[in-house]
Amino acid sequence: MIRATADADGLRFNASVNGAMVSLDTWAFINLAKGDPLRRQRFLSAIHSGVELLFSVTNAAELSGPQGRSADVVRTFLDEIGPRWFPAKLDVTETIKLEIAGSNPDAACIDQHFLKSYVADRLRPYTPGCGNLIDLSGDFFLLGPLLDYLGPQRESIYESSSKFDELLKTKMSAVRSLSKRDPLLLDKRFPWIPFDSARPACFVYFNLFRVMAADASSLKKGDAMDFCHAVMATAFASFATMDKQWKRRVDSLPKPNRLARIYGPSELDQMVMDMESWVVHRAAS
Image (tube, rainbow, N blue to C red; front, side, top):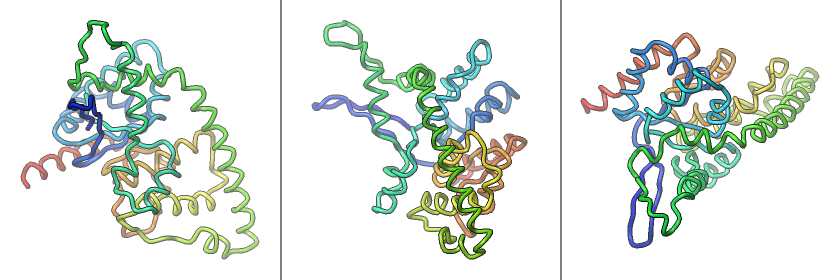
């Protein structure tokens, strides 16, 4: 959740996690916003009862695309989440480095720098002497304005993703080709690593590379964004949605582990039920 406080040194903004987290693909945002009204309300109720939303720059870039009635419905849904979200780091390599250095999960997962830049943009109209008061209630942190903030950057985000797509496919295809000549190559270059609760992103990141190297022929456009989403969502959330292929990849990671439960396109109802169960269990304990 994002909070604002004021003291003698000025305004302070902080994002922190205190409970279960949910991470959604773009298709899940749209289905929750436009689908079953009761499911939509139950999801929002779970959010306002303690579940936090893990929201990324790529979420905003993709959701800023649709226009017209569809965009209005999704934007209203996002605004109804209120301040019950926090920005996830886009650069997963930064997260990996922080985990290896021993940083706590909040520091490794939450993009405080992005939050500060977004807040600075929101505060730009409030110049000294303008006569306007800054409302630092939950409405200040609605997700709708974040789409406006990142909309102009949408093309550059996709361009960077496209370059990562090509790099990922080239490297994984090369490893796949070499592994056909040397069956032990994957074990040498990408050995399975066991789960470490202090480094969940490292576990997902390195093991997923092995899975993708073995599955290189199925890599496609957009997998760079999906890879980053899979690492952050699986490592730090409790509930996460993914398409069938990425769900299969994550499900193949070594066990036991304490990763997010992954839900496919036909499992949104089950995800909402599990979120509600978490809320009930938390209240009882």
